[in-house]
Length: 611
Image (cartoon, rainbow, N blue to C red; front, side):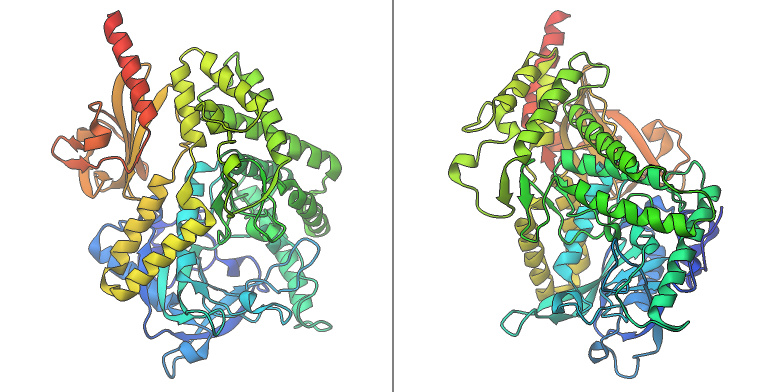
């Protein structure tokens, strides 16, 4: 298995059989990539959360107590630090060095790169204090270098949901450290607890762009000269991996045309499912089109042209695509060792926009259990396209109270027959779904997809996370367990879409402890109530809701890191739980869909009477 960059200092982490070939060290990209800065140890920091799903997927036995303890100690030793000397243990400042990664932006940037992130090996910590790459022109909120704990928790929830529901995933949050100190925005504000958020290293698209307005110039050691070397080296790195990773969509190579088509698919899915991360600028997208940085994430209630108050508009993503693609094309043409020039950027932008719309309509049809082979899918997509354009003509401010007469004007209101105000096109879409064969199946799928995600609104998610943090500070001993339960629950109850879900499954409920999952459904082909169980491989079995279950119990053979098994169950199992031959207890669903349960009873009784 090929390794990227320098080895991690902890051999427990970097054992060959546990290393992912797509992990990277930013130091291996360019000698001009990282700017060193001193940090010191935080006196009262503690590990608050580990992303057990991610570590299990990497092949690490994180459920094993000694393994978990060694990993936790390693993360605290390396990242429970800050560049703010006043917060450090006396005498420790300067005893450790982290690296801030240089990156630019489309059209230049006033910053030099990461202003609050420190890199060490194959991990990056966010919230480790201001770095040398902070611009003097930045305001306080962009220059203090810290991260609030409630924002770190919100980012973890967002990244897990987006990773599960978007076609090409996200950069994961792998751990959260309670920094042990608080920070107030102003003298009049109550101080809020700070955190350090840890992610695997990644390449932003902005790593391939210049930072034109930052720092010194005129010498070989100047910021501007080092920045130019960083861009050239990063593109050479991408060239090398384009050959090594040929055929691997998650590799480190870059083909701009393919990359932007993948980005179009990401934007299309997030638009269809109304999961908005904000503007897709080059600093918020990785080199394989994954989203990152979720401080502004929220679920929006409709396809209207909502704004967050900072001139960011839902549905306006092509504006940033049109801005970043020519910028990146310029630098790849200038520095690439291969002929990577895009013949016609305007033509490619048209192709990207068409691909985005086609992918959006595909996700909408799939969410309503309409396969591409369905004779009605063309008409459905035409209506959805019309409805989306109609919605985009309506501007509104996100996170503001809704006028009473606008509360029932979304597509789901039309489908449920409860629209008090709305669109004739919305009524036509609802009528089409009602007239389909097996209409209950499509209506239940549409209701699940369109069901609001109230806990993911910006204000609600922030308020809930702040409440959690304040309760933790009152009893820090229970912090890790409570944060883990909170994140697992927020993710589970906010799920609506499962990639690759067979269209003949009626989803009844969903349970998850973040490591294992249970999707309860009624199979309309088999006419059977079933649970799809998923969990990580451990030794000779699978970890299912805290219990190690042997392969023969699940009736599967699987050599991957995760097991997926189908188990028949009772009609009410999603409400009362499920016992797996006495080896594991599957909990009741955290998220349920009552209309699907009624539809399943109808399907089942019809079949029973027919036989």
